[in-house]
Structures are given as structure tokens and as C-alpha cells.
Image (tube, rainbow over all chains, first blue to last red; front, side):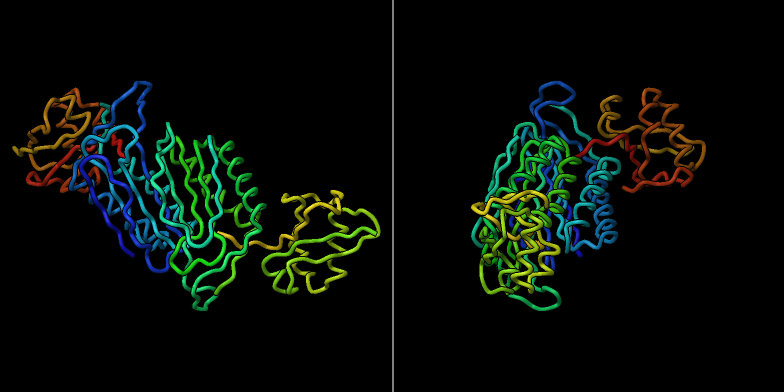
Length: 125
Length: 125
Length: 82
Length: 82
């Protein structure tokens, strides 16, 4: 059971070839992608402002909660700060679990909580 | 809206860097991983037997159903046949959608239907 | 008499030691009737036929669908992909 | 008098044109009391404080928690990550 958290400057690079966690029957990767339209207006990308130390802590709290609640094997969490252009990835969550059901449920719950409790704000550019 | 289906001999290679579909705000990738224990016994891997033309058709039917039902942007479906060693990937599903909710729901439903309607059988080796 | 060839896969194929069985029907028959004939000719397949379905030309068919002897017919027992 | 410094981010920071506000309280106060003082000193932040929460030393705190003026205090308005 491990939870990794990283905040990274700018767009997230392609997912690394992390070996799956021992015992995993499922790996689920979620990529949040910047869309070129925000509130009906064309944009160049999104500028993310993070209260960094707290954002890292909150991401870790949510991750640890869900790993325990769902019996996950591992969670790797990465979020951008700064400018992320259209079509690039600003948030990635990698969950390894024994079976898919708990992994999918945890992924949904993680993103719900991210959008309430993690001090990161986006602004269209 | 596009659905791609492939059956591949042996373990699936790492996910290709497919560009995300225009309009996607979420990409979700599911990897099914071979676990080294089956029914309590240690194994070397799984041998998948597929009724190939029908398996491809069924995967496409399920994919098209779910793309329409959930308004997904695209689905890419790959399943192994033949031998897949422990820790390797035997099934991969890539879903691009506008938002995460419909993508996660479709992923769960896809795998439920895969395990009922797609003529592929595994045997421990 | 009509002759039907039914493709087998996975556990059913392993049980019979062959990748197909051939059965005779008095006349063109439905999916459900053909399943009965398969069990009559191969009693060891009974449990597989209870949970299994027949596919015709690579698609599942309803129990009361009549089956062309020249179609590609397959017994799809409980699958285990993923 | 106690002096509190509250970090601002995102829309709240843009609205005020600063990354922090400083407010005075008659004595050491609770989270809810501090929010009132922030609005009194910065009425334009009122809507942000209605939905926002205060974080102390990088964690959310209950409304009735008393707040150390030397802690790192931040106003976390509605977030929009992901």
C-alpha cells in the first residue's frame, strides 16, 4: 500500500512505465485533459494556481483514505501547477488494485474529493 | 465517435501514445494484468483461447453500444489471445470522453459485458 | 436428416478432446432443439450446455431461432476473458 | 489586539489584488469569528467567505476551532483543480 503525490510545473509528461504493484489484477489510469473551450470561449490553455504544500497534503490525505477504504494496492497522484496548454494533461491518477471494481470506485471518489478539498484554482488563458 | 478493436497474440505492449480525441476532457485507461496465482495455485501465466472472429465482433458490439449510450468520444479495445505471462497485460481498454463520469461508468459496464458475452477462455499454465 | 457441425472452445473442447462435434437432427431445428441433440450425443457436455449459448455465424441467437445447417455454429460456454 | 495574516489564492486573490490580507481581532478568536473579521475588513470578499473555508497550517479546521495568530492561515475559496 503506497501513495505517491507530485505537483509538477506545466503539462504532465506521458505516463511513465511504472511496473504494476505486486498482486495487481487491474491498473486504471485517469488523465484529465485541458479542453480548448471554457465557458463557451476559445482558450489557449489553463493556468493552475496551487497552494502547494496544502495541495500536496490534501492529495495525500484523500489518497490514503481511499487506499484504506477500498483496499487498493497503490495510488500515484500527479497534478500540474502553472500553465497547461490545450490538449495536454493537467492531472493524472494511477490506481493499482486486485480487481477492477474497487479501483474504478476509488477513482470516481478521488476526483469528487479533488474538486472540493484540494486548493488548486484554474484560470483560462 | 470511433471504436477500434484488436486481438493480439501474447502480452499487450505498453500503451501507445495515441493522441486524445478532439474534445476529450478525460482519458481513462484500464489494464487487466495477469496475476501469478489462480485459484490458490502458483502459475506461469494464462493461455487465452479466443473464437477470434466472434470475439472481435462482440467487442465491437459492446463498444458501439456503450459509445452511443454514454456519448463517449472514442473507445480503443485490445485483448490478448495465446499465452500471457504473469504481470503482463492481457486486456486494455482506452476511453476518451468529455467528462470523467460517463467514461468511468462505461468502463465498468464494458468489463461486465466482456465477462459474459465475449468468447474468450483462459486456462492457467 | 440434417447434419450440424458445432465448434467447441475452451473447457468444452478440452472435455471432449476435439474442436467440434457433429450431430444429426430429424429436420431443420431450432437453437433449443439443437442443444438437446448435442447433449444426447455428448452427455458429458450437459453442464456446459446448461449455461452455454449457441452462436450462429458469430452472433448469439434466440432459443427459438431456426438454424441453417450450413451456418457456422459454435457452442459458447461460460467465458473467462479479461 | 491580535493580528492575523490570511493567505489568498485564485479568484479571491485576484479580487483583492493581493496575496494576503491582515486583520485585527480584539483577542484570540475562532475560525468563524476570524471569517467575520475578514469580511468586515474586506467586504468584497463576502461571497468568497460564504463558500470558502479557512485552513490553518495547511489543513482545514472546524468553525469553532480557536486559531493561533502565528499559524499559517489561508482562505480556501471554491477550488477548481483537475
